[in-house]
Length: 266
Ligand code: GLP
Image 1 (cartoon, rainbow, N blue to C red):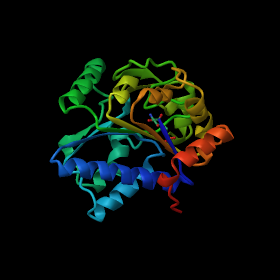
Image 2: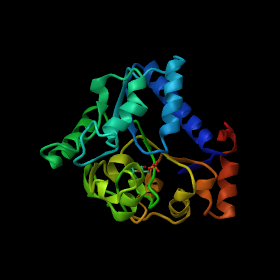
Image 3: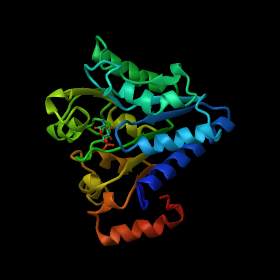
Image 4: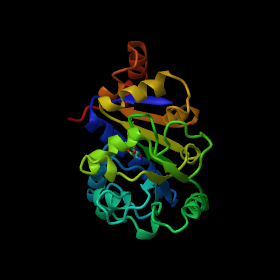
């Protein structure tokens, strides 16, 4: 697992966007579709903005990109401002040339939620699997909505959200915990690990405890993102604040190892 400790959030976003652009363009040169797994949350906003800028500058096209979002709340309307459908349109899809039929987001209002999850797994398989899964993490180390204790062999399914996550996400629901949905549909840990590449982005102090566990604490279902250590091509890209709790030795080790991949964008 690689760890890139960038100087700040802007650098995390820029580096990640450039990496994705390179991968999309590589696939395009081979006339291949590129399958991209995507997260919501505040962390990817900078990356999305850099991708939009690159599209506007004609450095990348999303015409042959197929996307699969990680998760969606159960029971809120697609046009609710906090639904992940709405988030993705507003912050990314409405600004690029992606084809509507290539966008896949779980339907949290499906009549049969279990079928919805199984169909999602089948759809991923039918396009040849995910080439690159981009993800963020929750303060409790969850990835997508794979809350602590989630099995590493889990696939797309319904999950009950923990109080930690409901508190963290209440900032998007007028700081009112009662307005946060209690369940969500989410890809599983195994769904993410099955991608050919996984990039996890994290910034800020609120992620420091989780990153310390993941980087130095070994593999544990308590911190589901630690499953990344099992992936042959897993990268964590974070800012300085997000690694506030790792030891100086580990910090220096990764800084040295990745010194050619660190950039400083103010
Ligand atoms: C939610 C999402 C996760 C996301 C996390 C962190 O729980 N399900 O996919 O990584 O929030 O969000 P933020 O980036 O806003 O910290």
